[in-house]
Length: 216
Ligand code: DX5
Ligand code: ZN
Image (tube, rainbow, N blue to C red; front, side):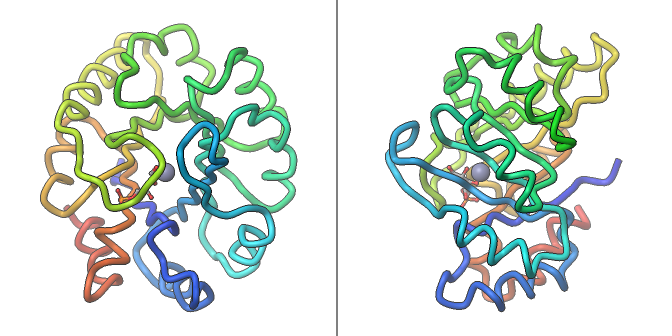
């Protein structure tokens, strides 16, 4: 499968969000990554439903919402109603993760589980058959523009092997510090979806940054 590219709108210029979404619409990107932060699960607050809704109206690519919030079940249906297609919740934020995943799937969205850098991939063993994708955080969640944590490569390789051993087709998404420099090794180790914030929106030519990632 060709690697999927999901630019993260967290690094976009919020003063010209329309044009930023339009740029992604016209790019080689596959998904649009939306980072939702509550100031509780992570030490930062991003944007909420009015902003997501404005982006959703203009977006022509599938929306992929990454919930860095406690108690995500409270909002699952609202994300579906607003037009989100891929929804991920954090392993560390869900006491009843199986229930949270079932709830996402019951709405018709694809379900993802995100893991922080300290969470071992083998903790996902029992939930893997239920999920469509795993989001491996390669920075501590909360901010764009951080440095990639090298150990994430080993985690991705280990997770890829577990998925293959179980005979599953679960996709692996990697998020945090992804760049044109580390993308080849991420793909080699098993990443299927690359989220990129700063390396896209901080580039002189974001359209080219996206297509460069896409053609690796
Ligand atoms: C961090 C977010 C990421 C972030 C990635 O908590 O989950 O999606 O926007 O940004 P970069 O690519 O700049 O690390
Ligand atoms: Zn994210």
